[in-house]
Length: 414
Ligand code: HGY
Ligand code: MN
Ligand code: MN
Image (cartoon, rainbow, N blue to C red; front, side, top):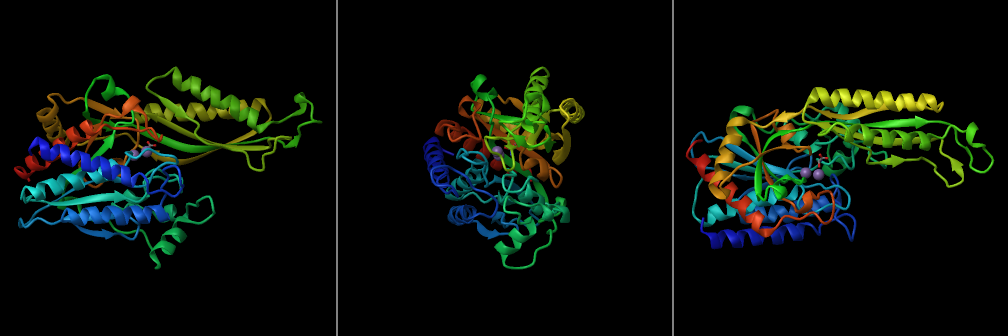
């Protein structure tokens, strides 16, 4: 593809990321959660871009946006590309969206050049990956791969609505967990383009890299229970302060993980039901997110952190309960597919750096259906899950060129 067309395509991609970044449930900041009004507006905006690129568009019963480009080739299999369209609260405009919008621009360019691919392509905009509205992540890709369970449908959001109620209200009809959208034998694989959300590519002065594996991840909730009381009349030595116990644990978790890189442990939310400045907190619920490239190390770290939380609680005459909400093993990317992707990366940028992803991605779920590969794009200061998240148009252009090269090389193999 000639450079001018590529530069123009990257500029169009950047403009669309900007436009999509303003489709939000919370004016003034970017927040899009599962089946929200903003997600519906995002699906219709992106569906229009998919149609312009020549794809047929549908939304499945779980709110996933699916664009399909059929190949005339007899017996053609399907290549899947995509990522998630939901966001964390006060998010950046690249996380998830890049992996949906970039392939649309790439296919539009190939259409412009009169290229017909010898395989079908499906571009997937998953309806939920971030676990913001419901604690169990990957609802969209689990539904698409036939791995959504009845138990998932019982998850409740902050308004006490179950996942089933929310889906049926959206669809206006009964819902049960769907079968996989494809059999593995029909697929060539899944490619997800995503910002790195880390500092490595920037440090190595590279625009893109390939993902070798996605880290093991466990999330859950710790509930500390003590005794509420009057802040003014209860002597310090007679208190059972749940918040003080949780605070001691939070600092322990930070030090524990800090001493064991690349282990990471994060308490991202803290909830003190019925809190008031003049009441000793009787109950506190904190989230715990633990990750490591190795499953065994991650599991051992979670066990030690929970034991420490319970030791801290006992010493303070508190009760402490652990409730796991999500566990995903480390996911190696497909070596053959990643080797092909690395070839395109080398063709464009001269060198291809393999990286482990500390962040979870829909590729974790897609890997249970088909071989997966991921292309990481450098993001400024490695910052993500933040409105200042940023990937430059120049780096978008490199990523676009890699994906077009990958699609064309795959044509000669599929
Ligand atoms: O939290 C994650 O790893 C991803 O951004 N959902
Ligand atoms: Mn994210
Ligand atoms: Mn993401």
